[in-house]
Image (cartoon, rainbow, N blue to C red; front, side, top):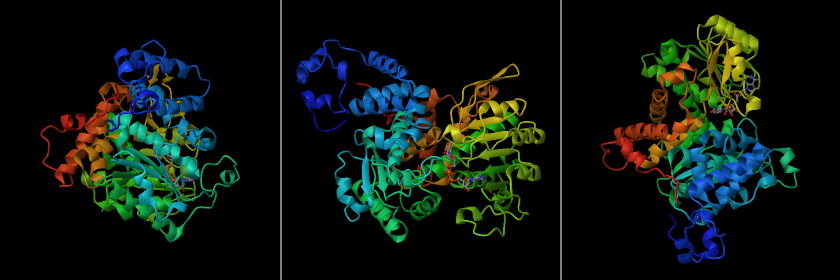
Length: 538
Ligand code: NAD
């Protein structure tokens, strides 16, 4: 809670303290609220129901997004109560897929600032800007808006992503909202449409690049670590050429991670572990073909390779079981101009130009779509996977929905209901051949909140790959037999706070074991992390 204590109208306008119509009669007298509120006193539960009734009457998801944001700006506890108690309904509205559309329209819907916009013009005074932030901060999500979801360069409009993501940290893992700071590093945009849009909210110039860019980011990281000692910084939606570089530059010294690379990796690995529970197969026996060779694909492949090695394969053997296809075909040795992050996966193999031919040649047990190419898992791709495998593993992880490689219905229909399917966008249950399948989203939101909580709770100095592997095991272990029976590779979202606590305990366990944490190891890690979780109430 904030250390100040506003009174009267100022209190009603303070989202951290406002309870709106739930202020009691006594509070109304004591806090100078008489006259500002109508006579009726509502319980928080009644307020939640009123919010939902209003929300459900709105015609579009974007309007619901705006309504939820303005609730967040008015009454933070009520906003989080609504999100926590109705996570299935609300998460797609405050995060993917709706947040993608919201970012595209951010110039039109921007109302109140949330977090800090730091622009290229602020070079040399970033520490001063951070000192304007009134709350003690333990978690920053930062983006430069260059690669927002699968939507490309959205410049300063990308701020919707750190804002949405931090809401999920608070809702899904109980990290107190006051500890969370969204940051937009506005280095310009190369999005011509935005540069010509009179309502564009960002810096109207082409992106800063090269040494200038690196110095700007470095000034931010240094200033943030000084302003908020021990702060966890999560890189979000940076383009490939910055994402890998920044992660490698800072990960060994600072408490940072990149969710697009490492969080995605852990959620996908957890999906594989769950699928293998259903097939009773071994990770070390899988052949995995990725469509895409970007942050998600190489992040997942790196963690899968580490997990295969942890289960006994050599690095060479593990690499030979992970293949990437990008826009120019199979990633193979000798291909000109392969970017650094793909080199590890350049296989000794003749070039193959298209995905279907690669499937026929390599006979994968699993395909993972992370190329943001909508419809790329064609009926023929799915039928071929079903011919090759009794239970083909099919992960169509790209989002938003328009970019999904295939729908859940297609995945089941074209594999005769045998696919072990995970998706990046929400799909309704599918009825096929007398069975109802409940596909669940391989959404990073199963992983990053718990990882963040574990790191913050333990005060870990670093975020390591071992923590993501522990998180993946923990997530897969939380999937019940009943989930697996109905085709769900992830637990039901309403269990997310319990799942996040387990993940946080596993992550904190690694931090203590590796000497990265503060103080002695707590006896009961679950109770230790649970005691630090924010539960929104008045
Ligand atoms: P990225 O830009 O880093 O990578 C995209 C990759 O796709 C690049 O390697 C590119 O070469 C490749 N590609 C482009 N066109 C192609 C084509 N026609 N055929 C084959 N490959 C092609 O992006 P990313 O961060 O890796 O994300 C990719 C997608 O995965 C996005 O839609 C993103 O939203 C989604 N994603 C989902 C989750 C999740 O939780 N479900 C997590 C992370 C990313």
